[in-house]
Image (cartoon, rainbow, N blue to C red; front, side, top):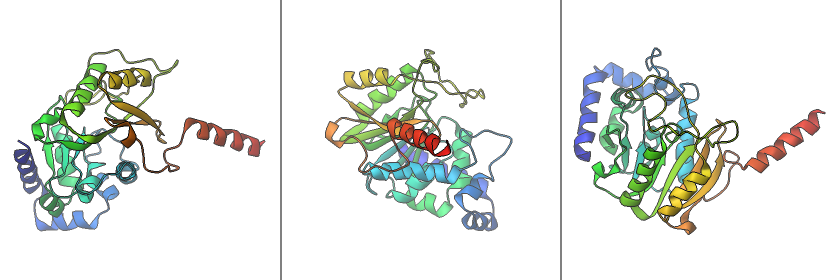
Length: 274
């Protein structure tokens, strides 16, 4: 199944890139410039502004969590390969796996963002199932990645992803995901369906989940959750692992900082401006 998905992506490329001049132009552009070539009349699930840096930060986080070129990684909701581009380049051939139900977004990422020689050399594997079923790849993963997926997924969908992590991960695996934490002005999402743009809907929007509820769901599955910190776009990164001793980042950066550190910086800035 996974091999078939990889071959389908190669076929997409051959169909859509056209002549050699188009391939040469792709190589000469930066990732940001390639993203700006996407159809501006459509929303591809992520902002085009800052596309390149936002994708690179996902690789940076995985590096801080110990990813290696030989690690098997599955990228849930990989979309137009904003983060997948960097992971495909870093990982060994056949180690990157992406699930994206929106076929057009995935096709755009493969044909517009990723270089053809990288596609052939790295042989990333893709699937378009809407249930984020990682069993289709028939492998055990060292890392699950779900950036800005739980900001749209229902509780039932999150439970399924956690169950898939338990079933399809190695003993030392880690699940990195991001959420928008619920609060008194941010009510917990109680809907039963995906909320936001998808292969079935053009309605934009994000939802909020309780960190406590996610911790409880992890505890039921003998998983350990660590809150890594809040990213500058407002999303909070979570790290989930079977082994508590292997959970968390290897070192701290100013990109991921605690709520108290941000509060201290705010007070300092107010005092200096007074």
